[in-house]
Image (cartoon, rainbow, N blue to C red; front, top):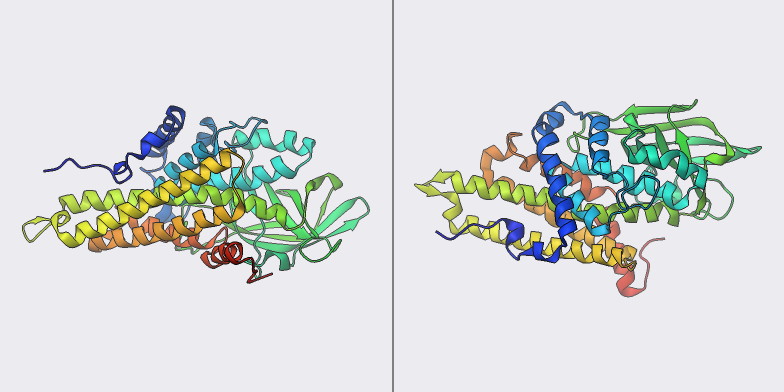
Length: 395
């Protein structure tokens, strides 16, 4: 019998990583093994996870804002951050979403666009897991078209007054601050969008948790209502003007997602291989049947291709050359293929595939959300299409 190799070992991909990158990957894997995998099926079934406890555990590894420089952040490479995301999502998409929203959305918005006072005030406690952040861009009627958002900010002397609703906001029910994006009316539509640091609680801010989810159940999701919320002048992010600011934050998060989805896919594939090797039908393991091996081979090839794509994007990011449409390629391909892999793995497990005893259906359900958030597949197709043709299919 030939020696078995893990799916990601097929092309000896570890040889493409440095010793430091491998060490970071391995330590995150150990923490996920110890603190996520033993409990995540219960969290998923109950529809809740210990977000603050996990944030503290992840902060001890420097995972919160790990690719940012200064202010208590680890200053790790983009590739190291990606590998961490991959290991976190191998545990559960909710674990990766916690780190992604905290570091690549909320912290990154302050780090890139905030005042020095805002950075000093918020980034150290957020890196330490003492303050949880969320990112309020999506609205009930405005997801893929954020330029048409209804949330408004108006001046009241030197203060700002916000009103509106943000929904499907990861971390919102447990957050200490929200980065809220609103239109000010000071400029043409899309160019008048500004970001605000909104402390929770603040009078007029109401956060309601979203229940009855069939996906990302081990993640805290909420709706933020802003009813004439008065904010001081220093709540505005001074460097963020126009839609490009929140979109740049999404680009940061999408890079981590391109890596993270591979973790869910890899975990699903390894589970399917182990199951097929033990499960006997017609007198032999189902892994020995040609149809099963064809499925496994095709999935392994897509997983390896996705890793090479993510690694290339990470190297571009570390060289300062990563462009938004390239991130769209990574998010589009890797999440789409990861979802296909999880679904196919479920067929190999048969009826057992729908049980929380195995992680496959949980990963598939989570990836249904990952496919949609941070830009739907259709939006990323149009971003790539515009780059290929020079013609915009949407405004």
